[in-house]
Image 1 (cartoon, rainbow, N blue to C red):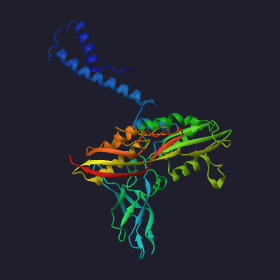
Image 2: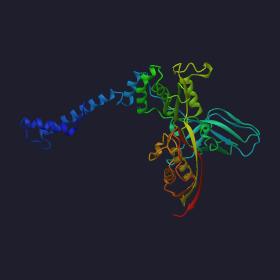
Image 3: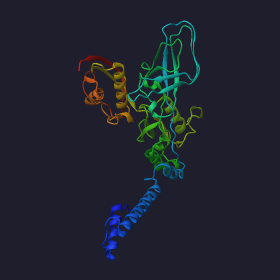
Image 4: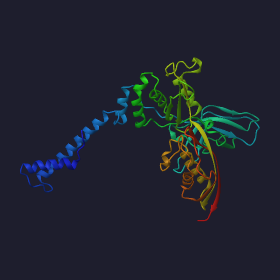
Length: 387
């Protein structure tokens, strides 16, 4: 049903009164009162009809209505999941055992909005006598992509860890740091996409739409694409995935391979793929980009806070999914070159940054069509200047 504006409805009502010989439309007149009340009522009916029409169509419905339509194809909205990451606990002395209980809190520094993200150790750990470092796995207190924090931000003790002098996650590579990605509840647009792909999966045929549907059935997968043109030889298929943090974690790849290809114990014969498909699932080829630069910042600025903010912006820039805190960013993705001017924009975005000089890189960084640029080592030198 086409929508009709309230003004148009009232104009039609007035035309009817005029045709019947009514001429008094002053405020408060009988005709004016009827037009106002009936016009608003009819406009509400029109709006209700439009909403009913939208809710009954999988392409336009939202929320609970979309979920009901998707249920007809056995597709349900994916729930949010918690992030798990690794950090290294360090101590200055190597004498004696240190016990770290399950549920101990390790947390982030406060971000620019004053938020702090808490993680809990997933099991009991012991740093044995003679050891000065221990890698532990921690899980986010709550589900959601907001806990996919960049390196160097989760380094605070929320629970006092007696004997531990430092918490470090900067020395771990991204695939080591992110044990499993966090993800938000599936959005309407993503759910709608899987709804449209669902029929293709039912056929169990060798088609890219079916593989896309199976890959996107894990909420940690942000993007996926299929190369069915024999990338590893005649008759082979390669599925590429990007997660909510960029390059997928080892755990995500394992879960996808077992679900779609099959488990190693069963010789990869119990997955969803058709038996004749020679398929493999992987992340994109990564190109690590190291950054070295000097920041001149205005006096009176807390350099540690500025360091955190710059690293968070850069992490969002290198994350293909971006970050809702930095909607002005144009995040990188597979095949997108690292633009030098955009790096400058990222670093100079905080108001307290006066100037920046890059040592590495000093020009645009080319990226191959099958490569995903990822953030490598970030080395920042801070120099205070007067306003």
